[in-house]
Image (cartoon, rainbow, N blue to C red; front, side, top):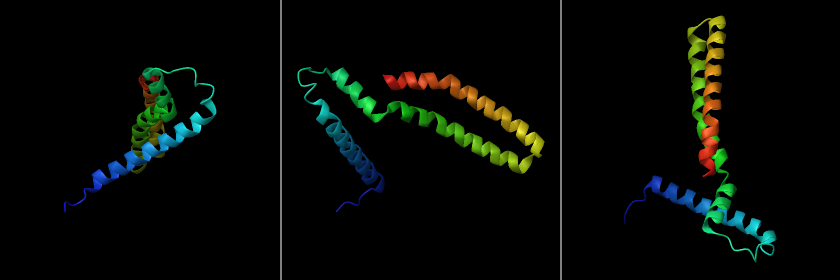
Length: 117
């Protein structure tokens, strides 16, 4: 018997849970709307758009953008804590936070645009 690869097993589990969650969301969402939309056939593009809305792709994109920036801020804060005086640390952190905010403001519209597909 072939040994089970833990990474493959976790990926399969995550995929199965995503499918189950999506099925439950569609079932809960479709029940009240089924009668109203019975006469209106949907195209594949409309169905894909609905699926993307239910998955909240924008939130995933925003998280993927913010997480590394927040992590970098935490690391900068920790590095400056041990190596500088409080006055210099506060000034440097203010500059770093300003740069990070500019970066987020610049990239956020692009992330949201790409998430809309």
